[in-house]
Amino acid sequence: MDCKENFEIKKLTSFKVGGEIAKVYFPENIDEFLEAIEKEPNAFVAGNLSNVLVSSDGYDGAVILTKKMDKIQFDGTKVTAGAGVRGTKLSKLALENNLSGLEFMVAFPGSVGGEVFMNAGAHGQMIADVLKSAKIYCPEKGLITLNNQDMKFSYRTSICQSKPYSVLEAEFKLCKKMTEEIQAKMDENLSFRLNKQPSLTLPNCGSTFRNPQGDSAGRLLDEAGLKDFKVGGVHVWENHANFIINDNNGTSLDILTVMYEMYKRVKDKFNIELKPEVRFLGGKNEKEVEICKILYQK
Image (cartoon, rainbow, N blue to C red):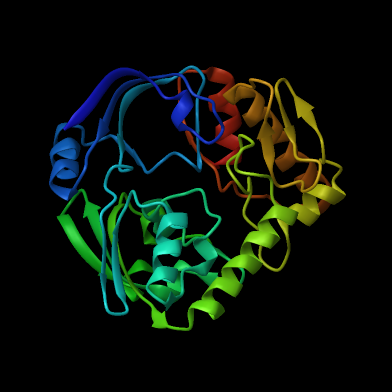
C-alpha cells in the first residue's frame, strides 16, 4: 500500500492550503483500507480533501485518503462506486448508461465517500434519494453494510457524522431515462453552477456554512455585509457570500478568521449560529484551536 511520511498536503486540497502530514495512507481497495486503519485506529479519514481545511501548520497524526478507491461497476439500474470515485465522473458514466438520479453530482468537486457522509445534494436531488446501501467501516464491528434507512439521512448529514463511521463504498439504485432528458438536467445544473458558484479553478471548498432551517446562509451572510470581506490572502466571494476564495496564498488561519467573522456577524445580526460545512484538520496552532472551539462547538 502507498504510504507517505511527512507529506506536503497543500496541492491535494481544494483550498490549496495545508502543511505537512506526519503519515498519509492511500489504500486502493477495502482490504488495504482495513490494513491501514488497523495500523492507525485514530487516523483522520477523507476522500480527495475537497471539503477539508487542513492547517498550514500541518497535522501530527495519520490521514487515510480513499481517493484511489475508485472502482465503478454497473449492473442494470444499480451502480456500485468506491469512496474515491469523483461525483462528476460517476454522474457522466450514469448518463452514458441512460441512468438518472445522479445529475446533481455533475459539478461536484467531491468524491462518493464524502458525498454520502454529508448527504450531498443540489437542484432538488440528494444522495438520500438514490442510495441503496453503503459499506461502512465501524471501529467496533469492522466492515458493516447499512441500508438507506440505517444511514439516518437528513439535511447535509448522515449517521456517519454522529458516529466514527467511514464510507468505503456505495450502491445506488437509479432509473432508466432518455439520454436527452438526463443531459438536459445536467446542462441546467452546470449552468446554475457557472452563474451562482465560483469556478472549480478558484481555490475554494464550496459552501462554507450549511443553510439554517428555512433560510439561506448566503442571504444571511450577504445581509450581514460579508461579500468581499478580506483577511490576508483570502476573501468572501463577491458574487455569493457563502463562499471563501483563496486567490493570494492565504493560510488556514486566514480562512478560519474569515469563517469566524462570518459566523459572528450573522449571530450578532440575526441571532442565528451558522454551522460549517467545511471540516477542519489541525490542532498545532493555538489561535486556530480557539476559533474552532466556537465554530464547531467543541
